[in-house]
Image 1 (cartoon, rainbow, N blue to C red):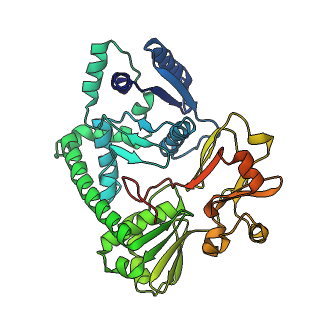
Image 2: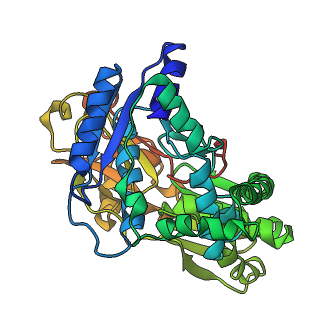
Length: 407
């Protein structure tokens, strides 16, 4: 609620638009009523509001982790569908301290101890956490001052969850110096170290790596091998996350164990993080694995979707173009012969064959209609839909914090 008020003041002063989003996980009785209560408050304060419902079967274990993943999925999907560029989250100082403590007890490394970042780039939106340095007491004081109400989530008192147990233990831990200030100082130091490592990894990627807009990479094996092992592992982890399109960035520790074999050429091929890694001559090649790809699915009107965590697909318009049954699917073996015979595809052989089967292709009742990796459209499709459908490699995990160029 405090974030809504602060963001409203900031946005209104700059002529922008704001929408408040509430996720109803449907995990306990009363959650729907609470979401509608917030919606009523938003209407009273003149703020646009939407409720996002988690539908489907709920897990019997790992509830909080699953709820968090679904919450982010719903929020990011809504932002993607409505061309929203900034998603503000209300995590505050106490949330950050709990995150550090939770990860410390789980034995997290440097990146984990840095906890939640104030700004995170995704394929569709920039996530911002402007309240990370604000204490919950200050935020409640502001709400009192403004005369704004708020709700306390009963889940925060549920003893089944680890964070609830950590809150109860905070007083005892403080006696040993494990205070909020100490945890946040640890997070700040880890953030500085993480940023330094990330900058070094980005410089290494810029020096050693060529990225192709079809979603694969070539790495100079000698340059990678000459870099400090920690930096090389961090760089390779970022590349694996981007090329593979998976939900998580692999830890540098996991990648580091495989580095020696890759850089000295002893390991010729391996799979890791949905990627196939090949060592050829003086280069490492990274391709998306040709398994676990999405099945064929219809292309909806006015859609914004991230296909396989790698390719952003935008379909503009209020109805399916020309009423055709447009579908997106992976490049199939049978498409090779079809496209080789098609006059509208001229650059098929410019891409390694290992990349073909990992690419999205748009088809209709006539067959292949658009292959963005080859910058190719069937002539009749271009006339009807060329300005409506767009596809581009924009992985969920960026190579660099500030974006990157493809060369």
